[in-house]
Length: 170
Image (cartoon, rainbow, N blue to C red; front, side):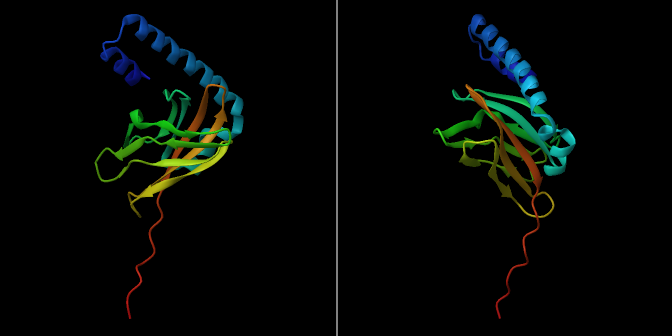
């Protein structure tokens, strides 16, 4: 949240706009805390880390494409670019989301331009992988809640399985 506040303050916006944006962030954090609490065991940290052993991020995207990262577990080795996140398609029964770009801080692997989508319903959306074996990552998208003004997503990360051995010609 501090990074978001610093970005807002550095943008040299009208002070009234900055105060309104900060108030919105604070209100959103409080709403998200209550919403996450209401989801109970489905967002239990241990359960989520068992599903996404490299870590996960829970965030809210408004239909105006304002992004509010909320809860993050693990992922200390990764950097995220939240500025690319947006809803790319939104119909009454279908949703597509541009996931955040992420890369290992050591620069050995990155996941960019991932768009996932599916039925506009709570549940899995799919994802994408980069690399294989050690260092390979699968980035998964999941809808946790659909609200009147936004959708709460989870992006989880798991190690990519090794690729099968290549077929050798006879």
